[in-house]
Length: 310
Image (cartoon, rainbow, N blue to C red; front, side):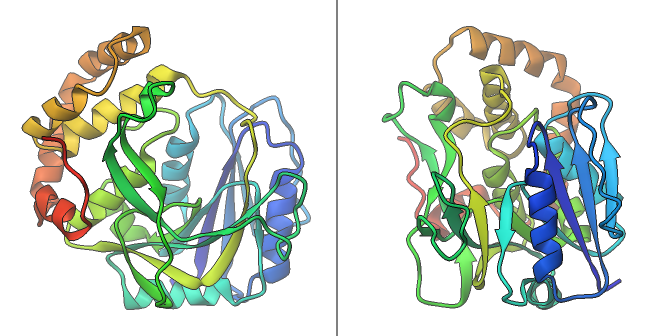
């Protein structure tokens, strides 16, 4: 089917889901679309009845934004999918039809768009705080000792290139679109807890599976950046995701090198306990990835000039 399924998860977002969906309706240029809206707070009541294309799903318990994204893709009706946060604004730049065309021309690709930063006093998409263009992968750093869960496998905003669309090492911006079958083929976001490391995880997997990641600069989507999120993410979940990614798609020697950068504090110990509990599933996930991967992770590091620890 040639329409577009749009997945929008949210938790404690107040009126923002309405504003995001209204902005989609005000700007979308394709007839066949749906919006899969997933509410993580069972106590919050939303009425989307004025938006006939919205499929509203309320989770009985919190499963995390990445699990919601995965669930939304799996439930989608159309073969073309887009994932947005619930605090976005859109321009009348034919973004939906462009997405479908990009997907059809590059079916083994994860895409992101130009990210326009709004917030900090303005929600005006034409009075923004800056533009951002996908990400580079930062494999490790020694510069964030105050945030130990961010010391390895992190995306950082990349410098803009002149082309309208081009290959990137990591998508970023909460403005992603892709062929549903490709997302599911590479395993999507399965295995991650809550939130964190999701963009590096799926970006690396897309490359290793024989595809790639690209940015379409001619689509510009605004993202409301906030000083604090309306929900908490346990540090142990962030660390768990790092460990899960290391143990499923990284070679053992690289895992050992990167583990040196993570302080073995109580969050780490809790994450390790979860890893041990999930050991059998992690082993099976690793086997599944070894079966579908067509490239070597060191090829990825070389192609995108990713600094590797000694």
